[in-house]
Image (tube, rainbow, N blue to C red; front, side):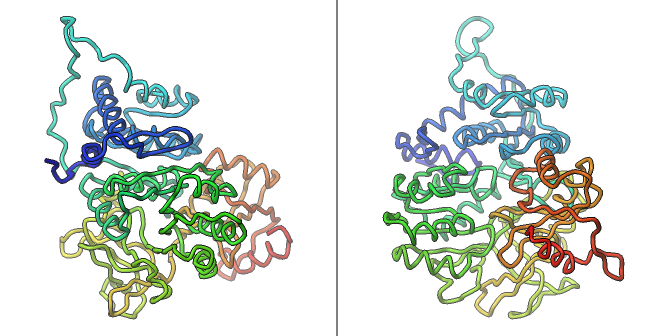
Length: 511
C-alpha cells in the first residue's frame, strides 16, 4: 500500500510502484520508465554517499541532458543533499559565481572543461557520463570479500520534509543571480496544488521544449509523476520551426509553453497543412500571452484549451486560471492555489481592498524557504507579519477583484521577461561592465514588441561586446540588440534619460 509522498524522491518511487515499465520520460531517441529512473537514482545515490556526499551538501549539475538531470536530482534527494540544476550555457564568470556561492561538494557537467576549477574549489567532479555510469558500476565489495560494502554512515539526523533539497538560481536586483532554496515539503505542496488545477491525466503526453534548469521545465517532471503521464522533452531547436512536427510525432496532448513557444505554434498552425490535433491543453508562464496569439491558436486548434498562470521562482506558482478562463475574465492571472492566499499591499504594508492596485503578496506553503546566504534580501522579500509564516512580497504590482481573481499590472524593479525567461537589467549591465573596453552600459527592457536593447560606450565593436558577455552570463540573458554611442543622455538629475535613449537607438536605425 503506497503512502503519500513525503520527500521529493518518494514522488518518483510512488510513480514507479504504480507504473514501473512504461517509457515515461523521453528526449531525442532515448526513453526511461519510472522504474528505470527510480533504480538508477537509487544506485547513484548509494555511490555518491560512498564518495562522501552528506546530508545538506550541495550538488551542482550543468547539463543539457534532461534524463541525466532527472536521475541526478532524485539521487541527490535520496542522499539528503541539495541539487542545483544549471543551464548548459552557464560558464566562465557565471559558473565561477555558482562555485563561490553554493560551495558544492559535487559538480556534474556534460564536459570536463571545469574539472580543474571545480577541484580547486574543493568539489568532487564527475562528467554526466561518469554520473550515469555509477548506476551501472559493480557494487564495491565488503572488506571481507562478501556482499556489498556499506557506505560510510550518515551520523546526522534522517532527512526531514523541512530539509532543503533544491536551489534554483534566478535573476534579481543584484549583479549576480541569487539562489532560491526549496524544501521537500514546499516542492511537493506546490506540485500537488498545480496538478490539482491543471489536471494532467494518465493518458497525457506532455511536450516540454523548456530546459529543466528553468523551474517550469523542472516541475513538468513532478507533474507527470503525480498524474502517471508521459513527458517528452524537446530541444531548443524543436521550439522553432520543427515544433509542429515534434508535437504531431510525439502525440502531445499538453504543451508546457512560454509566450515565444506559443507565438511560434500559432504562426505554424495557421499556415501548416498538418496540425497537432491531439493537443488539448496549452499552459503558459513567463509572461502574458498576446490576445492575437490566443485567438489564432483557438482558430487553428478548436479543441485546444488555454490556462494562463502567474508565479515566481520564490513561490513556484501563485495563481492559475480555469481552462479558457481568460474568455470570461480577460487580463486575469487566475485564482490563488488551494491552501494559499494572494492580496495586495500599499506603501506602508497595509492590505488594500479589492480593485486597488498595490504590491502583490503571496502567503502559503508554496512560499519557498528564502535566498541562499542572502539574509537581508530574504528578510526584505520573505516578510514575517507579526511573527507569522512568511509572506512573499513579490515586487510585482496588480489588483484582486471581489471574487479573488488576480490581475497583474507590472513590475516596479528592474526584472523583465525575455524569450520567456526572467532577466535582471542590473545583472546584464553588470556583465557588460565586466567586459574590458566597455565604459558604460544601459539596458532598455523589452517594450512595444521589441526585445531588450543594450546601449554601450565602448572602445570595442558591439559584436565583440555581446560575444564577451556570453562568457559572463547565460546566452538567453544577452540582449539581441546592442548599439554603441558616444554618450548616454541624462536628465536634469544626472540620471540616464531612458526615453531619450530609446529615441536615439530608434533614430540610429539599428534597433
